[in-house]
Length: 449
Image (tube, rainbow, N blue to C red; front, side, top):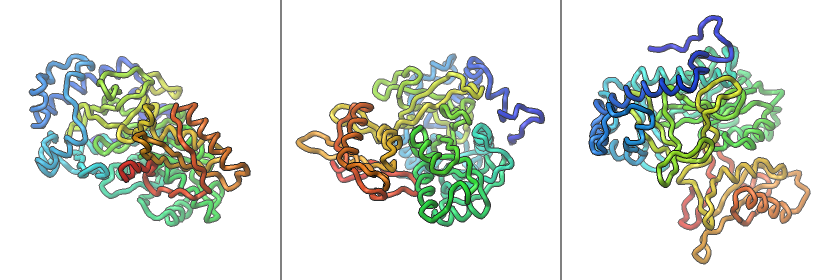
């Protein structure tokens, strides 16, 4: 069992300075050694991987460089779901016997049957160790009072609170209680940090203001960790939340099929530092599967390096991201996730132009005449898709709705290349999200995206 313990006299900027500041060649050697071991474990422990590797004519012993991984087959959410149903309860992707599994998380099931993600005791412990490293990089310290307001019911974000607890912070396991109750908890215990989704952080702040709570005077929250939506990667969204709360916002990224937070922002907030000793990253063109250049958008494909219960070899996440390997100003040298721009299944194609809801969000959150809330409505007219963007004006807006609509439409066209009708609504006209926001109403099929 590994324990997250900092060495006496260690550099206070880092949890593990030797690891976090090592050279890029050292990172590459670390990943190659781990990948070679992990592929052998997957091949010998998982019937699914053994059959898949054999069918593709590849074997773990053939992997000599990290680039050789591209010869191995992909796996995706649908395959996980099918294997779980065929070989319940966890599927034959698992590479250890059930007696070695001590914890499971599960996906929400929003796109199908929920998929379970199993962990051995060592898997779980190493995950929490990485959460400690992330929290420390974001400035959380033992003297903090941390309020964890994520769902504990099978959600992989629930146990992340143990990272803050292992770091030494006082931890309040609030969970997903009603907003009034959460504000009361934060006020009673004078929490200095909280974790939720970007949409809920905004909603909670608005709720506090409506209840007459002064976010700076009555509450002590100075750090807000957000995850679960692309919004946390958008500077304009973070800035709006920071201005509302008078607190610093840090974006985290994770997924149930790997573990809670796989990447998170340091105090520089120029991208999210990746769990590079646990997960190997590929960013690929979604159409031809070829790697994209650093900084370019592509689909995030992940390979675990140490998770023994259920290895994930070339898992297609469906997330569209961009990355860099340039060292951060903080001194850390791990790869950084520059942004989660959306999901393949969220992408809209309007008259031949690709558009993600996050592209619209960046404009809505930057426009001071708008509250920052928005909704995209897609309809079909004369066999062509037509987009309408609904935005809200702030209560103090003194101009005309027509002028604001024209201004927003011009901004949208200039930045994204998409032409859309813009409808201006009164403040609070759009529904607020208490977890993950639903931003797209697809009227072509009558289904919400």
